[in-house]
Length: 262
Image (cartoon, rainbow, N blue to C red; front, top):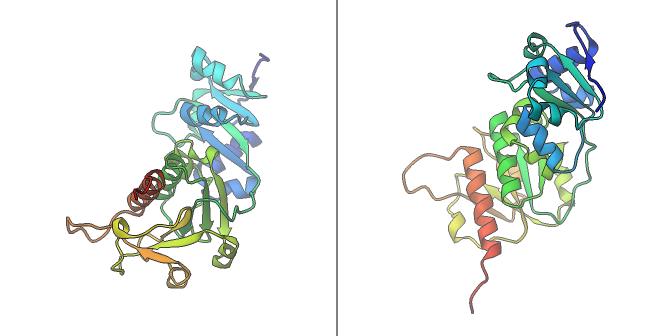
């Protein structure tokens, strides 16, 4: 293992970039890089067979054998003081270890894949949670329309808990870009009598989830083969979009696993 490069100047270009990536949700697009902070995200990247461009590790983390070994798996290791690391950390109790990853190239849309479509879902925590549910329930493609929180922003990455690295992610799309999909669109809305648990679901399909307050845009709902809602006999007005997504994706998976009886 080669010795790490030690940085001590706060205005070092790398550290300036890390502060931007941690604080500006759109900085990853400008810089072409993604900041993965914490042992869990770094380990999740490696578990998918991917490698970062470099590791950044604080002195206290370098003193811990497990974190030092994790950092050493990067082709280049940068070491900084704890104070410098805390200057760009976005975590309350940081492990003081992170990977800098080159922003992945945007893949082509797979027209036949089970898909989630995000229509202006703006809360980063919701977006990350939806990505996590998609990965958990075997939906391998997420398409984000313009107005959705940046998929590779630091808050979405933290909420996604490593789900990003097992998904095909395409963002910045216009509604017309969905025309390439050959799977049926299934919309979600409150203003419908069609209930999820009674519907016949196409397999696979593309679940369309909308803005936290406005829901799916009417023009996009009009493109959907089905528009469904989750039954709520307890009387609540609506579910959080991430919670609704988990219910819909699980139900879709369950239907696909059940063998119909004659």
